[in-house]
Length: 172
Image (cartoon, rainbow, N blue to C red; front, top):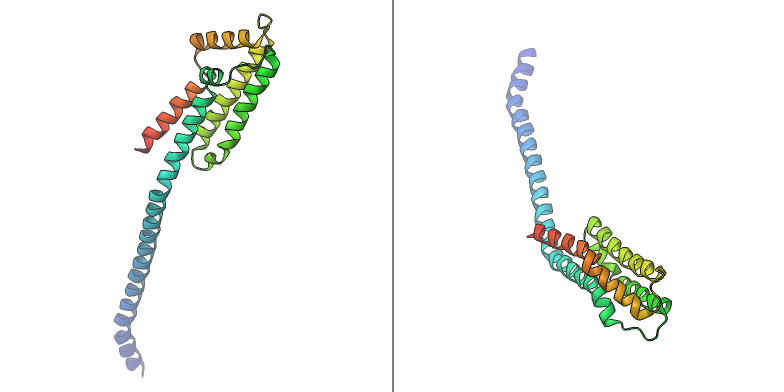
């Protein structure tokens, strides 16, 4: 009886070993196929998202160009001599431009978005600081002081534009 049991065990042992090895390789194959499917899905999503990301960067470059003090001041001429009213008009224009492009942040990196916000805030701060200067007594004088300062220091949006260009060059 014991020899029959041992004979039976010996005849089943190769089948059990083959079953375990088959199960192991089947599991390995299923995991690899799942990884491959995820990779292909990710790659397909990247193909579809790339144009959207590129368009978001383009829109943010346009935003930065539009709020650049030199271009903003040439586009938005003062209506009167009131410097505070003119400053308010400029800041409102910047805020409207920003709100119009607010959704683009989902397509660009957090660092890039923060750089763009910093450029926007720096431009607004430049307008407010210039308005508070004692030698600035009219809207035209405010424009003159801001434009002179741009020649010396450059626009706050230049840094953000350079950051976007670097980030886009990393994408290719």
